[in-house]
Image (cartoon, rainbow over all chains, first blue to last red; front, side, top):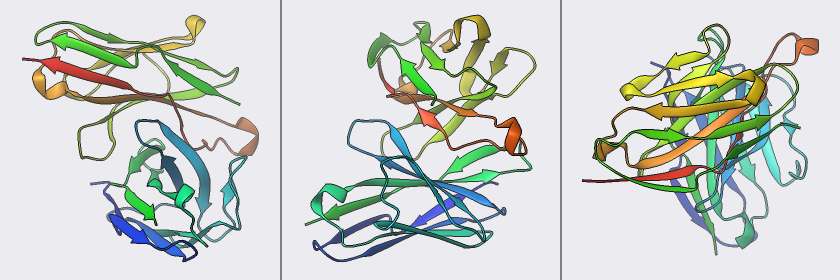
Length: 116
Length: 119
């Protein structure tokens, strides 16, 4: 149990386009999901907290207009990278908080974004 | 804001050696502590976690960690490593905000330790 999926697993896009990444909790409901970013050979950095039915909470330094988050249901959160640029190329990872399992977060496999 | 420090960025050990990876955090309040592992090409997996109670926690695959509150530390240990333990290990913390219903934040990760086990 407690499986989190992400789609797509990798995407290549042109500069200036927008890319949507989906995060799904497959066998549990998650009112809270988190989005992280991981640069090569570095650690994960929390970008934002996605709350079902309300606005996302962004970490300091993360542009909310660039990284649009929507958490429309208890099993789905989406991250849209708008007007992507090469510096947005990264590995984006989501996690879903399993509240009945002592608040443990389960991570998705990540999405590799490359902006040309 | 909280921060997490992992002291060893690269560790190389031989099989059957004992392992200890250091992790220190900075935060004055109540925290949850985690160790995650990322095997090559795979996603993050939870090794173990500490929320409260016995400060010595046992996780999967023979790993354990000890929370020492006075030292703000949560070091990961394994008495005898195997080649299959080669991976990236991340220590992480999130903070409990008692004023907001006890919910916990997203995780703050350390920079990770790349562990290589030589056969």
